[in-house]
Length: 136
Image (cartoon, rainbow, N blue to C red; front, side):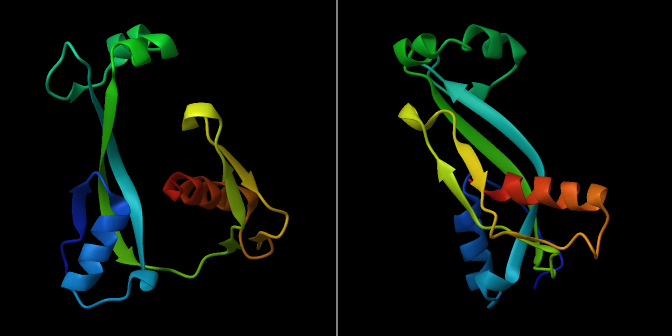
């Protein structure tokens, strides 16, 4: 594994695969931490991607506006790749997608394992939050 493991990417899975190939590592043994995220978008009127900020958020909170303007979104992640650590939880989940896949719902199964005997509730909540952020 290389010393410098911070990458900027729009496709985390692809970046993990490329990293594993480049450094002769197994993808299953790698994990990542999201260090930052920037959202960009463009419309028919805006030919190039621009940073999505609060003014745009207000303007494009209506789904019909997004559709009518043919808005396209792009997210760029800053990630740190590292070796997988042993976790105190094992998530079993499914994603339920509504129409247009705009409001996904993460349903965590009762088959999931949460080792609260090894960590306190606050640490488990942070770990759960981190893991849910990685699901896409």
